[in-house]
Amino acid sequence: KLYGGKITFIGGFSSQTVLDNPYSTMEEKIEDVRYAYDVLAPGGGYAAFPVVVDVRSAASAILPVHKECATRYANT
Image 1 (cartoon, one colour):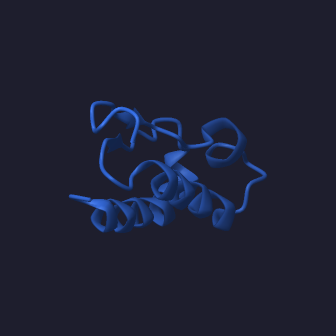
Image 2 (spheres, one colour):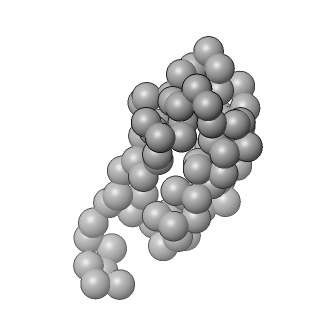
């Protein structure tokens, strides 16, 4: 509200403490992705940028969540 659509947020994921943490559960990783979208995406001005995710262990579960959230908040 303060910037009237003139600012963009990028990222917002807990990459080191959740997404790339070998002790985090898949449920925690998915919840972290959803949380970032739910807090930063409403109203537009958000670009997801998860670059640290260990692709081998999480991508197959996390990428569909990104697509779901991005679709939900598209053009908001």
